[in-house]
Amino acid sequence: MAIQPIDLQTLYSQLGTVSKTVAHQQQGIQLQNAIQQDEHGKRLQELHQTVEAASAKEDGPGAVKNNKGGSSAEEEKKDKKKKDAREEESPEKVFEVLKDPRLGRHIDISG
Image 1 (cartoon, rainbow, N blue to C red):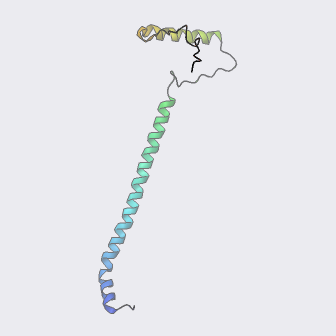
Image 2 (cartoon, rainbow, N blue to C red):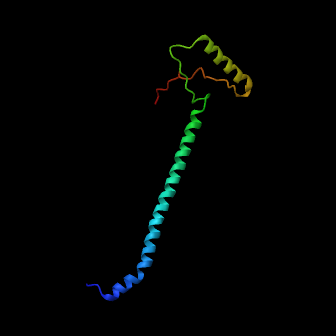
Image 3 (cartoon, rainbow, N blue to C red):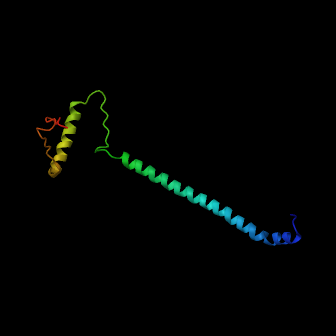
């Protein structure tokens, strides 16, 4: 099929609206990319802050102790004083460990 003159008239008359539509689409893509980059930057910043917050712990189950060779008597005394101070602060938190003397002694082989 050949291009008719009426098709060219329609094409030229609509050229301005088509170019505006294409320009808006391209700007939309650029805007979407900018928004995604901002969100990604925020996620990275939040991730960085959570990692630093976790590494700031000094006491607790996440604490890492570096004992090279062996611990000195002074360090043991300091640790014991800290532990005693914690126990004195919260006597309610001290739990008594109970063990059943029969635990692990009875073996049921009747199946």
